[in-house]
Image (cartoon, rainbow, N blue to C red; front, top):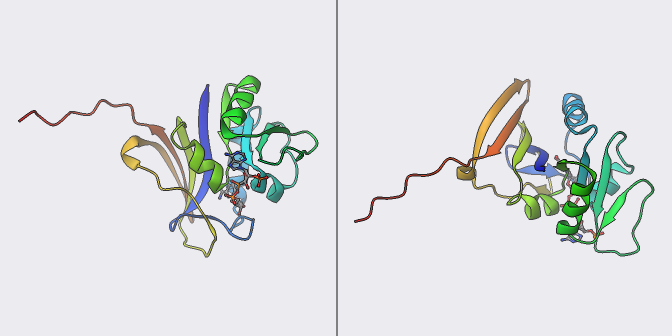
Length: 165
Ligand SMILES: NC(=O)c1ccc[n+]([C@@H]2O[C@H](COP(=O)([O-])OP(=O)(O)OC[C@H]3O[C@@H](n4cnc5c(N)ncnc54)[C@H](OP(=O)(O)O)[C@@H]3O)[C@@H](O)[C@H]2O)c1
């Protein structure tokens, strides 16, 4: 089972504004579709409501603390571990689809980051969590006009320990 965090992140860490994305990048939407079709998405209730419907060709698990919340065609989980368990029962490839709240709670568990690094610093109110980059290595970078598609994998290279003194 693989957990991949999928996000578009500006230079200043912004990922959202007023419940929506701060940009419209059609190539990014196409990439998201290409990467996630046939797999399962885990997202927070606010991100789900900003999209407003389940994305076709993918299973959707929405995390919410409201036991009565439901939406047609969507699985609901009451916690992040429950969401990941449910997602794992649906597909081997789990994509964490945001937002900030859910990224922060899954970053330590993720195997891969699929980031769109947006070369801009827009105003926003929602930020990607701080990443300890010493734990990640860049494996591919595809440059575009105004943004890069970048894949990071968790760095499992053994580190030399400091010599005993
Ligand atoms: N740039 C990107 O790639 C990207 C991707 C996704 C989203 N976004 C943006 O991010 C913003 C939304 O992000 P957000 O951080 O505000 O919200 P979010 O992470 O989408 O959703 C937060 C909600 O998830 C539920 N939740 C979180 N932790 C939980 C837990 N441990 N147990 C149970 N439920 C839990 C709660 O729902 P309840 O309140 O229902 O209990 C909480 O209010 C929007 O602006 C959106 O456009 C950007």
